[in-house]
Image (cartoon, rainbow, N blue to C red):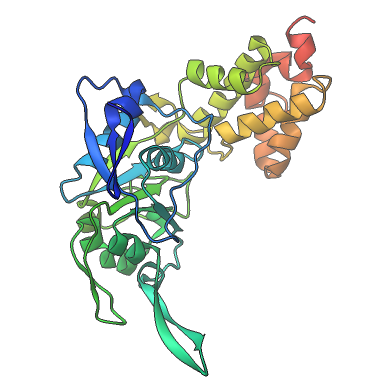
Length: 343
């Protein structure tokens, strides 16, 4: 079967063929409409993005059969939480609306508001649906980013949405019924159940809200996988240089989040600093090396890509005498990529 077949105004998508990395044994065929309103667009995706296979399988199984529950994706910054849904929606052809939450987000930012519009000889008042209500009405994917920053009243207003039940728009008294492919995914740094000093703006959420979600844990890819992706994106970098970069990145991740224990992190064993070198940071570091013709030291390139943005106390904890990075990287940071590779 082809990956996608157009049947009248619907696309038949075979997940087995579309996501071969998942290793599905049987065909899993879904039908996605292709006649959505023009303002609802299928997202683009980073062509170099490679999701964790287990995470991808869990996400797809929820997408196909959510059983009246939404999904809560949590983990540190730069672990691919939002990019996962861009990746999935772009492949299956499902439009997506994205909304970022803040501690000040109110229900009207989720539902909509009245606006004034010029109509012929006069001005009329119309109600504009906001992202969550719009996605629900038209049956498309909705991604609520930074969801653990929501206040309790706003989170409570989403209870019925998270269960994919009809939702009353408070200002108009219209009841919005969830369309066929409406799905709500929350992305957050925490699972909403406990405070984490690494993410001070995140809030503990009410159990009644969280009980409406399934959860997927995200963390940084295994060093071998990150190494593979960096080598593919920056083929002129040698493996010794890439290995040093990953040693630095993972030391910072452990110092900020605590070491990994199973699928989670032990936050009781951090170094009391906040200095996460994400995969985006790694790519920026590598880019600096390329731009400087591999003639600048790793430390000089890291300074521009990461270190210069730290507060003074954290910088000293990393780069001072006996600092974390001095210990884990030794004198490698004072060398250029050419020197590290023996060229």
